[in-house]
Image (cartoon, rainbow, N blue to C red; front, side, top):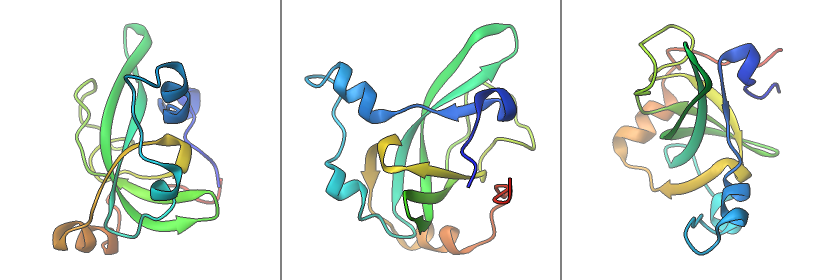
Length: 131
């Protein structure tokens, strides 16, 4: 499955494990065992790098994603936040489905009835799983 690409998609995911290795005393992430146990409806916080018009470096935002399903290397999730650094659009916004790996997860939260229902519902902006 294709992962998000900064050039192609206008956004990508940052590696939370790299951030932790660079600053282990101040950048904490959940243990790998916990990051591997998420179920549909659980939430994972990821770091997104987002292209912003007029800013060659782009913006970085930490946002929550609802886990929809497990994959061999991680999960398929659905964005549960609205990005602050870009205007609403049809390619990347609340409800965007995306693949992510264990290494991208910087925080977790347990499911509730609302997040489980959202995990089961169709994604408003589905990920192109074929490409």
